[in-house]
Each structure stands twice: as C-alpha cells, then as structure tokens.
Length: 222
Length: 307
Image (cartoon, chains in turn yellow, blue):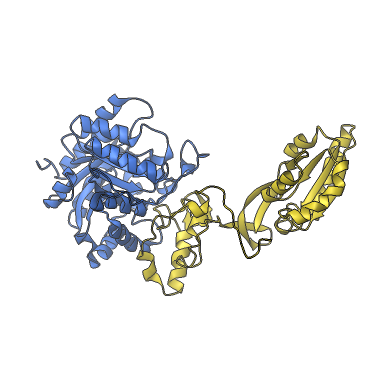
C-alpha cells in the first residue's frame, strides 16, 4: 500500500490560517491503514486546528468528510455539495488523492496534510517499510522475492557492495542489506548458482525515466 | 594485449605490479595533483585517481587524471556510478581515452550519506558490474551500452574492486567471479589488515582458477597511528582491522607509531608476495603519499620495471 505520515502541525496551520471555512477530507484506503489520514485522523486534526485558532480568537469552521477513495473521480464527486461552504480543502490522502481533488475542483485551493512516503508493507504493528518502487518491470522472480531496487540503498542489481556488515547496510545498522537477504533466500531455495548470473543494466523507462506513466486498459475503457 | 595500458604491460610480463592512489584536492589546485603524483613518479606503475571519494566533492577524477597524464605518468581513472548516469559515464570514458587515459577502475561508490552532500540523490543508473560490462562492450565490440556504434572506440584496461572482508564472506569469491565474467581485467582489493582472512579468500579464488582469469593487486594501507587504526576498525564500512594490529601500534611510543605502521605494511607485502594469485600491490597511503617510495623500496619492489 501507499504509506503516509501527517505533516508537522505548524505547516498545516500555515496553510489554512488565511481561511475561515475548511473542508477536511480523509481517505478510507491506504492512509487509513497506516493511521495517517482516515476518519479517525480527520477528527483529531479537526479538533487540533479548531483549538489552535480558537486560542487566537478565530473560529475555524471545519467540515469533516472521509471518502472511500480519494484517487477515484467517482468518489470525489461526493465533495461537490460541500464546496460552497468551504474556502479551502485540506486533504489527508496521498498525493494521488490531493491531485484528483485539484483536477476536479479547479477554482478551489487544496492543501496536503500528509507527506506521502512510499509503497510499503507492514513489518509489525505500527511499523511500515518500503518494499516496492514501482519500477514497472518486476524482477522479484530472479532475486528470491527480495527487491534490490527498493531495498538496496544503491539500487545495486549485482550486489552486495563492500559495505555490508553482519547483514546490515553501511548507511544504517537498522537497515537490512537487501543483497544479504537475497543471498539467504537463494540459499534456502537451493538456487545459489543464480547469484553469478549477471543482471543486465536496467531499462529505467518503465520506472518513470520515460516520463509520467499511465496504464490504459482498452478492455475496461468505456 | 587488449590495450596500450602500461599496467597491462607490466602485469602481462609477469612482473609484480605496484599502483598507488592520489586523492584530488578540494579546490582548483592543479599544483597539488602534480605534487602528489611526483612523489610517486619512480616507485609505481600507475596512479589511481579517486572519484569524489567518500562522496565528498573534489576536483573530478577525469580532470586530475589528465593533469597526471600531462606530466608523463599513468593514471588509473576511478569512476563511481553514484554521481553520473550511463550517458555521462560513457562520454567521460571517450573523453578520458581521447586524452590518452587507458586504464580504469569501476566502482559503485560510497553512499552520498557519508559525504558533504548527504541530501544529494545518488544516481546508480548502473552498478559496478554493469559499468564493467559497458566499458568492455565499448572496447571489444566498439558499441555503446545502448548499441550504437562508436567511431574509434576507447580501449580501456578494466579494473574492479573486491572487498573480501565484507559480509557475507561466502559470497565474496562468487562476487569476484561475477566481476570477471562482466569483463574485469584486474582487481584492486580493499585494504588488507586481516591477512589470515585474506588468504582464506585467495584460497577460494585459486581453487576456482579465478587467479588465471584476472590480475589481483592486494590493497595495502599504512597506518599512521593507533588512533587511525581504531577509527578504521570502528567507523569505516567494510574494513577489517584485527585487534592485534591496534595493540601492536599502541605498544610503541606515539611518535614511533607511524614507523610501526610502515613496518606492518612492508611485512604484509612480503607475506602476501608468497600467496599464489597475487600479481601486484595497490598501496593506498591516505594523505600520506610521501611514504609510498619508502614502502615500495623496503618491500623489495624497487626499481620498477622499464616497459
């Protein structure tokens, strides 16, 4: 899923301070799972903002709404009835959600309340870690199910580099060395020989090097 | 001969090669490059020119290598894949070769985190293995990585690094094999302080006959002090400094520690000369180039062969 973290409250306050009526929009998908922008976080952020401005003698009107998905135009339509009563929109969705709102309501300013982080998986309760960079040409089938693009700090496709120590990356002893993980998996699978097969230089076009990416499924297009 | 490289000629003759390195200055100081290189003139066969080592901005390795070439010495152009994509790297290889530079060392490079621009985006369009493949393709097939033809292709003698001390140890011979398969002609190893472990690695290398396919130059770094030894043990990634080295340096007075460091370096060379598959030494005297002649002479590697 896409992970996110709420922005520092000062930054959010700076965004909304010129306005009196805010439409605060959460999303029920990824940001709900990683506890950054679901219905619960919408409620908490609304209280914090109201309280902050109340201390300055300003009554901030906040309309809270959490959509099923902010990255889908169909769900975004649900915001239309609320827009007349809002000077600005504050979105707790990932960057995809913020941009879907911005492209639908061109004359209404929208601010992000979270920093979108990465595509990751949950390692344990409250911990998410990066697992995929969306390179568009998945190589997990030849790397034992561990991704060197997302998990090696140098994206080495023929690692490990000379900085590995006790299975950890040279940049941080809390970061696993992706190539040690790959090697351990290849051993467990009895596929050690695969290590010596050179992985050729990657074509980065599907990874975004070819410009913004798009999927068009003709069978689904109306 | 694959190339015009002096290092290739020395290694092919069966002589023990000696290389050293010269870190370019942090500023537009061509005289500094010349000074450092002059210290090495009569005692080494080629001089590595590091490429923004430890991810700190310095004079480019290409520019410093040209300066060294211009004073009649032989640079080994180090190139890391951290800072440039395949377009820039291939263009630099063609440019360097146009200035008569014919020997290279292909590396991935230290992560930007360790340098003076930790906020920089590491490029890593290629990794070191793919850079080796690219330079070999340019030389042997006269083609760029993207398959276009090159008019007058650069013929580089291709070096790669090996660190037998990084984990997992069991993978380190295979990793060397991979670099040889990619096209490495010679290898310069990480600084060797743990000789027992290095010899174990070399046994794995010779068992597979890899020493017949590549020239291995053993990396030697003289310690200036016990403090430096401790720092390298604790702070430098992928470095294996055994406790007995630190103890030995500590056992002599502070002002004698540098000399003890040189003694250790010379002893290491003499021991490693006996190890099958070692074809030379790469002496990395970090900001201490002036001591290289002494080490080379004491290790019986002087005079250098005329080629």
